[in-house]
Length: 339
Image (cartoon, rainbow, N blue to C red):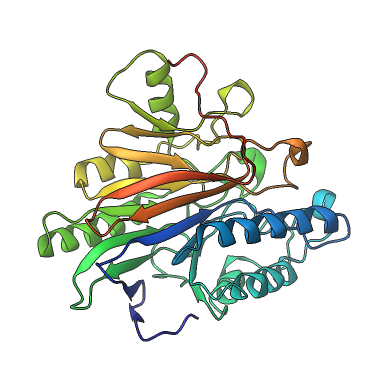
C-alpha cells in the first residue's frame, strides 16, 4: 500500500490524498493493458510495457488510474492461467514509476480457471508499494469499491474519485452469459456517500472510474448520430466493428442515479479497445480511455489510433480538462456521420 505524509486510509472504503490547490493535478487513465506474461505473449507484453512507460514519461502524472483488464489469464492468448504471477510482475512494473496508482477490476483479470479469484487478486493489488486499492465493504457487491478523495491542506474535499467494480459476467460467471454491470447496492452506496459530501460542499463535483461502459453511453452515441444537440461531442471515435459497445444486457441504475444525484460529472471506462469516444450526456462527460492492448484482440498489434492514455487535469481554478494522449502522432478525432 502507498505510504506518504499526504495520504491516509480514512476507513474501510475511503482514502484521502492531500493536493496543492495552487497547481494543476494530473491523473493519467490507463486501461486494458492485457498483459500476459506467459509462453505466447513475451513480445507483445514488451510492446505494452514500453507503451505505458512512454505515456507516463510524456504526461508526468500525479496519480495513475487503471480501469481494468490489467492482466489477461487466457491461455490461448497468453499461454498461462497464472494471474497471480501476472499481477506480481505488473505491480513491480507500476511501482518503478514511483507514482501512486489506483485501480479497478476488469472482466478479464480473473478469468474462469485462472489461479487467483478476485479476493486473492485484491490482496495482491493492494500490496504494491505505490498502490492505492482496497477490497471495500464486504456487504457491497463486487471487489474494489472505494473512494479516493483529493483534499486541500485543511481536509476539504476538492475532488472525490470513485472507483467501482463493474463486475464480470452474468448468471453463470462465464463470457457467454453476457457482461455484468454495476449493481444496485453499489450505486446506492456510492450515491449515499456523494450526498454526504454534497452536504459539506454543495458545489462538489466527482469522477467515477470503472471498466465496462454504462448502457447510456451507447444511447448517447446513437442520439448524437441522429442529431440530438443535447449530446455534446468532446473527442475520439468509435472504432469497434458495427459501432459496438460492450455494454451489459442487464439494465443497471448507476448512470441515472448519478444524474439524479448530481455530483458525478465525469465517468471514465475502458473495455472496448478501439473506442476512444468522449461526450457529454445529461450533464456527465462519458469517456473511453485510450487502451494499451497488444494481445486481446485479433490483429490489434497493427492498430494504432486507439493506443495511448487519457490525461485528466484538475486545474488550480477547479476546472477539469480531459485529453487523449496517443502513443503515436495519429489519432482519430471524428465520429462517422457527425459533423
